[in-house]
Length: 207
Image 1 (cartoon, rainbow, N blue to C red):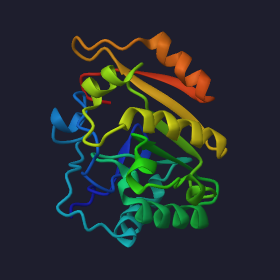
Image 2: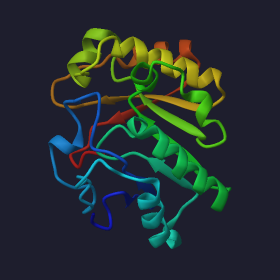
Image 3: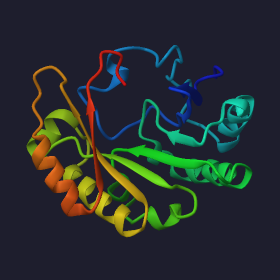
Image 4: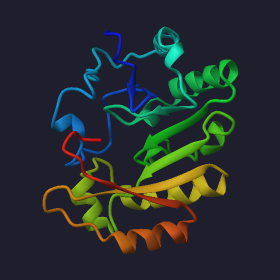
């Protein structure tokens, strides 16, 4: 693997890239548009990623470790749940003041057929969850999930995350080509679920 496959720097923060697999195929996903993020090639040579592989790369850039580390790459980090937990545990033990955020599509409970959020208490501080649309039709057009009932699962995951005490933000991407998302309705949904809301205007560089 190259030095920046598993960990990379973006806007001064360290990001962790665990997998290229995802249960969505979002139309606006950066990996369908370009091969790198700020010069870091995030396509993995293997899906057999071990926690120690990530930890070794983090240690190589320990002088760049900021107050927040984010699990976010070309795939869905929660699909590597056990690796994520092990890496997060290492970070919390060695760098206890570091905030850990997971950017996720919110499908984990549907994938694992259980509520995995209690397993992440004390390891993860924040979740940024892709709501992406005001209803299932819009969501499916934008996110193109390969599992059934994905939109319902996302909303349930947001609600569960709030109930479990995580700092929870639901996000939408706006301004990508002619795809329309009703921001106000998404805000209403997010408020009803108890989460924070963030709009991510589409940028040409993909982030």
